[in-house]
Length: 84
Image 1 (spheres, rainbow, N blue to C red):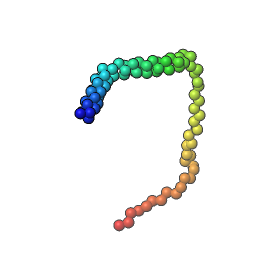
Image 2 (cartoon, rainbow, N blue to C red; image 1 turned 90 degrees about the vertical axis):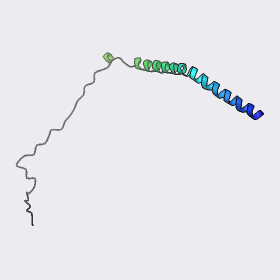
Image 3 (cartoon, one colour; image 1 turned 90 degrees about the horizontal axis):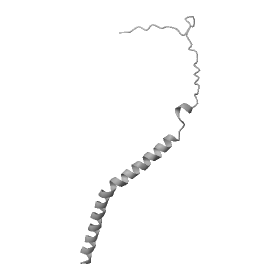
Image 4 (tube, one colour; image 1 turned 30 degrees about the horizontal axis):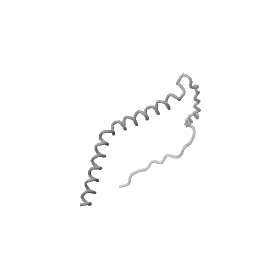
């Protein structure tokens, strides 16, 4: 008899928790979403506004492209012929 009473209590607690989770889960998730939103909004507002940011100049130094002169001798041209 005690075994059945224990099983019945476990099932009752399980279904009660399941019901309460369905009842309160949306409210808990909504609260967590609002807290997260306020945290991100506060972090975003603490950043400097765009107008106040200093403009930084960007300097790009490119190496001048080397053009090969025709007078430079690169190598010797070898013409291969096919053998049958």
